[in-house]
Every structure is written in C-alpha cells, then in structure tokens.
Length: 466
Image (tube, rainbow, N blue to C red; front, side):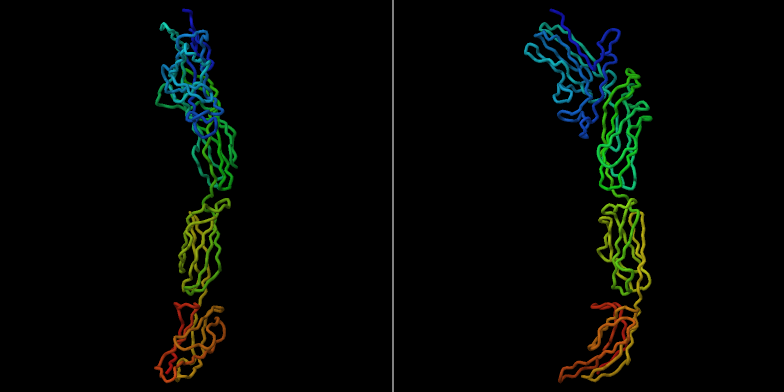
C-alpha cells in the first residue's frame, strides 16, 4: 500500500507542525452568522436559499490524492456539530450534511473545498472536523482541524418599528457589542472599548449625527435627526467591520468582520397637542334657551402639524348645554361642537381640552328681558265685535319678538323688533250664526322663539270676551 495523504485546511491557517499546531491550536475562528448581508431583515443563518453578498462563511479546503480510485473518504464533525453547518458554495445554495462519505469506486466527485458556517456559539476550540480515508483493507489515515464558533451579541436599537413625534427633533440610535466569556459559558462580557460601527441611512428624510461610533463598556450610539413631516419613514444600517479579541486563545487578535444590522422602520408621527385655536360661528347669541353657536377647535403639534386623528377632545360649558353630536375626537386636527344658550345673560365660557392643553373662549349671551304691556289692560267685547288693543314689548334692541294669542286673531303683524314702536292689533271675535258663545279669555303673549312654544313668555292681563 502506498502512502496516501489527506489534508484539511481551514481559514488559510498555516499547516500544523509540532512547533506551530495552528489548525488545532488555537484553530479557526467562526463568527456565528447573525448579520444581514442581503438586507432582507432576516439573520443570514435563518435565510433559505442562496444569500446574496454572503461573506461570513469560512473555506474548508479538502486535499486528497486524486489518483486513488478505491476506498472511501469521510468528512465528519467529531464535536461541536450543532455549532456549524457545511455548504457546497459560499452563497449557501446547497447544504452538505455531515457526516458526508464519498465512495471512490463509485466515481464520487470529491470537492476541493466546502464552506463552514457558524450557527451557534461553542466553547473555545469546541468544533472539531475530521477528514478520514479508509482503504479496502480497513486501514485509515486522517487529518483534523478545530474551530471556535464565536457568538457576537451585536444588537441595534430600535430593532423593531418605532414611532417618533414630529416635534421631538431627533431620536437616539444605540448599539451594543458583547462576547461570550470563555471562562464562564453562562456569562457575557463587553467587547473591547473603542469597537467601532459605521452608520448608513438606507431610506427616509432623516439625517445621521455621526457616520461612525465606538463602544464604551459595550455600548455606543448616535443621534438621528427626524424630519417634521408625519408619515416619513427612515431606516438605518450599522456595520461592525472589525473586532479586537481580549481572551485566550485569541487574546489580542484583530478579526475582520462584516456584521450588518438594520433598524426597524422609524416613522415620524404628529406630536402631542401644543396649540388649540377656537373659532366660533358667532361672537354672541341670545339668552333664550334656543339659540345655538358652533365652536371649531383646530389642534396642532409643536411644529404646526395637525395632531393625530382620534386625539381625544373634551368640551366643558358654563350655563349653556352641549348638544349631541359634539366631536370627542379629532379628524385632520379639527373637532367641532354646538352649544345651546341658557336663559342667563352675560358670558358663556366654553373650555376645550386636548391632552394636557386647555383653551377657553367667552361668548356674549345677550339679555332679552322682554316685558309685554297691553292697553287697555282688560275690556269686554261683544260677540261679533272687534276690539283694538295696543301691545308693546320691551326687549333688547334688535331682538325679534313674536306675538301669539290664546284665542282670537291678530290682524296686525305677528312680530316686531326690540326698540321698535308699540304695535296695534285687532282681536276680532268669531261666532257662527245662530249660536252663542260663552265668555272666554284672550291672552296675548310674546316670545323670542319663532314657530315653537317658548319656554319663557311675557303675558298681559286678560282680555275678556263675552
């Protein structure tokens, strides 16, 4: 049997010798593949199918005498198999399940290299891969390499969708870099101070405060200036390109990386209520328990945007009453309410609340104070005759006064305005021929509410009709 050599080379480490056993001590370093090289917001180790721009796998070269035509060659994980996956291509297109056996007499094609991916952290030198050749007689020859799967805890915040109020001006972006403690598998420790990440704005109208940041005790960050336009959505990426290790067996080693994380969407939303502007449909109404006025409230945030739809609004009146249908939530930054006047003249104070903000407006409530006088105060009217009386109402200048009678007909006008001269009216009696009429009372009255029974009437003394 001629001598047959098998050789594994990993991560371009120098060949093992007694003086420099690099392939087994310290071995290769695999970074657990939690970055996002293809930018699809999924860690690369969870991707299915090929991963474009993948650059975190380590090449494992297989050197074997291609003149050998019998026996079998086997690649297997002696330990730490749960920490790695092996692929035929660097882009993770085709998995290579371990253990993998090539039978030479069957013409199996042996690859010159495969690619190893770290998928779970391991202990130092916790991954051992072996290439074993066995001839037909059962003789064996092997080569081994070891590796450490390093789980870098690189976290970017905000990681999920975040909402930032338009008047906030800016929001903080943070990151942390922690490593496993090789002496205590249950513990982690911060990366060396000065570990640097590079920032990149991927989309949106925001702007970054710094292009790069470094850690202190494992943490770092920068500011993101937010545009004051609700609906703007920004996303940011951070890339960890290198890391200096400070634990044996890799103490002092600087490793090149391309760990990339992206934030979730950072959306600008309207801020909290900062100003309330109240616009009344009129500056006054009458104290008649009928008149109404509509108040429109416009509510803006600190940079002049309408507050978010659905912002709660409360209305508080003084003597007046709030009509049904008052809007308790904003739409487009606006809410309206209608208030009915009381019968108390003076001022109606209307208070509007939104968030912690309070705004008030005073509406003048005009006095009516109509006093009805009738001359003569009373008289007898024979059946079929017409009586003439003088009616006068003392009301606020310009206030409409509507006249009514409980019986009989006003042959003059049915309304006047406060401040106008007294009106004369005829009260004709009505009787059907051949029938008599018992005595009745005619009660004139005045009201400021047209076409509806007033709550408040000013009546004269009776006019008796025989």
